[in-house]
Length: 345
Image 1 (spheres, helix red, strand yellow):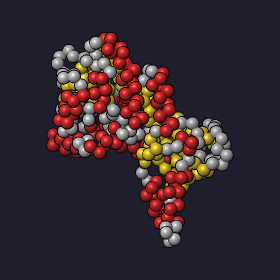
Image 2: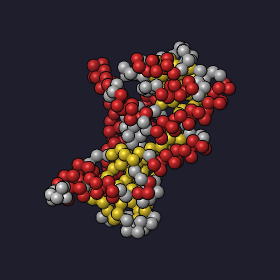
Image 3: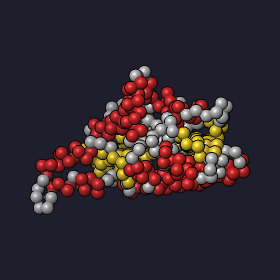
Image 4: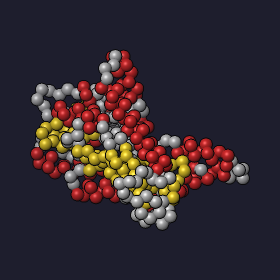
């Protein structure tokens, strides 16, 4: 196995697999960069309207919102964060929050419940009409003000600034849905100096993962299908199952090495330009593998706020939560002390 030194040129036979794994992640970041580049280019009004409409229509179906609302770790993390600040907000008595991409309005209602006297709920899709009814049914009249517009088009009365900007903007691999620039637009125009961003920091972690049970369910299955040998389909099944990232729950016991931090942004300070140039040298180590075959890498997205109990809650969720996984066509065998090194840009 590789030893860490300045003359190491790769992974001595393992590098192609690891590079392919990192390449999958790099493909996502490259696609995100292309979205940002496209966003910056001048387009005709018709082209821009078509792109916006396609994106917004995807959020008019309730299925995607149902999935998010049933993601208990994610919902509970937001609820606890807002609850943590509630006593201070209620004492202050004049807190205004903006919920960017409010969707069905859950976070807007939470804000009102936990002490915000005024909540601006921004929703660009046609779901905004239903959002108004949710607000009326769950918050005192006049507390939640729904704006049916894109975040970049939000207009508030002259001089109005807000105390809190909250948003559930994270996509696959953290940045995939390209919503963070919209949140930053609201922050830069309306958040008071020293105001609160929720989430306040974002991190993207990467760790090596063994997941033989999943691999067997997808690949070994074809070796005997009701007594019929379909092994000839294993290469196709491998290519199909391992060609795209997956989003699913994983068992923390499958982690064969410590996670490394790929990205960490302070959302009170990060600029949109910072999102265009993400580079990171990656070094994963398997401390005590004992010949273990590592077949996957896992990516974990986590939130963080300045609250010890909330951070402890999140650490617990990180051990059991859903991950974005990049799978290898051919698992490699790693030994104690193995080091996997590459770079991501």
